[in-house]
Length: 493
Ligand code: AMP
Ligand code: MG
Image 1 (cartoon, rainbow, N blue to C red):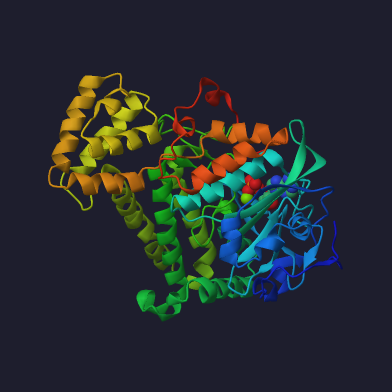
Image 2: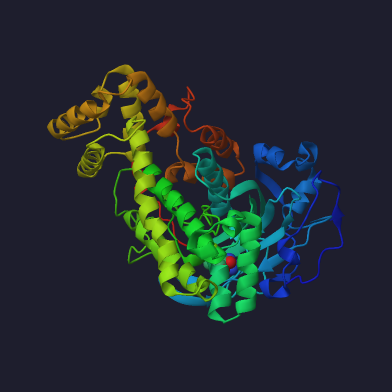
């Protein structure tokens, strides 16, 4: 472990730094430098995000940047550290975890944290090697940006660098480092950590930090008799409800919803064995290691609430009465179904609530299950059908056409009061044509492992604009091939 900060400082990247997390007390982290990554090369870069951050693009494309984002050189002004957290994994208290392979480089003056993932051992690595493999790094890189383009809150991914450095998983693989960004990487588990140790001073310091930087309105609210911590819990519950509703509406299965993988900002974080549904199978389990199906697609909304309960428990010493904790959490239970319905309404092309909409939605989803229909292709074809007044391509997806025709009648009745042009516009902006299906990621990974980055770059381009048609790239919007169902994705990454 490299506990000393590198002396080598890379040339100026165009960013100013202002490290607020590292200004907290040492109870929250260990300062350390990334472990150098031998012979790094570029795997992927996200120029759009680089520009949003204010990075100098010439610098971003330079060898100095390659060295910085591989952990081989330090940027002046950064203050690298690994933070400590705890958490519940698969429903069981796991005790101390922490950034076992992530190192926060620092926070830009504009308030974006920049973190390396896979950058070597930290005091929190436990049995791990501190590294990440190329395969999972490419998945995180592509999916973060795909989610962002879908309008779903997420950590972002700036770049991936690879190295011949070998790491052992089920087989020997090569290492990679993902550079990711977020306004904060604080997790529910950070709060659980200090609460579990009865370190109430630190617990309060952390909550104050999060409120001041990310939820300032909590200080001014008169809700819960001005209890800012209860208001914080309510605000987190609401953001998390919106996030979970978006996952369910788009067909995203996270795969490892442990409390240490829950962002205090309601961001999608820690892309591991995630999967976008192909056929609509509500109880689909995407994580090969999840033998009980705790994190099955249709269990996500409940398991997210369970995680919020753990956050509520952790914040209770600051909030006070358990009844207030429960009242703050209650917003999840009202917000989630409302958000979900609003999203499904838009998928159906309805710009406002209609009587009978819930039945039409439920019946439609049931038909998808019964007929094994591809979720994304269904919604996209339905959008085009409304635009072109031709439902045949939708009918082609169903074995039970009679049942579908009954449903289509009820759907068209629902749409009767809506302008079809407006409905189609809304649907084509809501129902993506391109998602990061497992087999697409797998193809890009296999090519990248052979040194061919073109598939990865094609996916980057398509997923950055998932609602556009992208003529010539029909194959990327098509049904998954048969071999897609044989891809097995576990926690091993
Ligand atoms: P995850 O399931 O990827 O969210 O990781 C759970 C915990 O294990 C976190 O504390 C990670 O930092 C840690 N971890 C996962 N993989 C590794 C690794 N290869 N080396 C060190 N720590 C790891
Ligand atoms: Mg994690």
